[in-house]
Length: 175
Image (cartoon, rainbow, N blue to C red; front, side, top):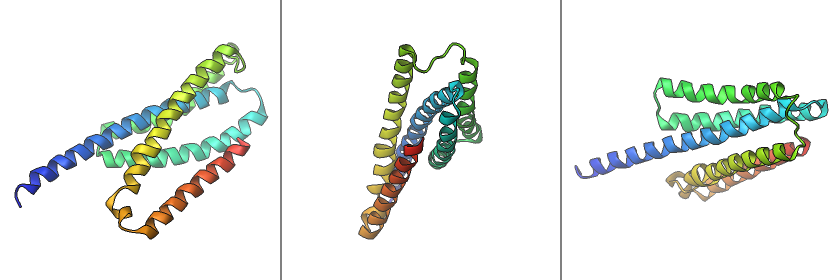
C-alpha cells in the first residue's frame, strides 16, 4: 500500500506540469490570434467589415476565455500568475485594435507584405490552437476514465462537440 503513494504523487506532479504547459501554449496561441484579429479590425475602414467582426469576436473571446479559464484552474497557478494570464488575455485584443488604428495610414490590408505577415501569424496561431484543442484538450477528455466507462456519455460529448463546431461554422458564414 505504501509504495502506491509515491507513484500517485509523481503522477500528480506530472499531470500538473502537463496542465501548466497546456496553459502556456494555449495562451500563446490565443494572444497571437487576438492581436492579429484586433489589428485587422482596427485597420478596417468599412462598417460592413467591422459589424460581423464584432459579433464574431464577442463569441470567440467568450469561448476562448471559458476554455482558457478552465485550463488555468487545472494548472493550479498562484494568484500572481493567474492575474498575469488573465491580463494578457484581456488586453491583447484591444492592443491589436489600437495598433490597427495607429497604423491605419501605413497599414494596407491588401498589400502583399501585409497579407503574407497576417497569413503566417494566422497559420501559426491556428495550428497551435487546433493542436491544443484536438490533442491536449479533447483527447484528454475523451480518453479519460469517466468517458471511457460510458458509451452514452461519449455520444453526448461527441454531439456537443459537433454542435459547437457547427454553430461556429455557421457564425463564420457571416463574419
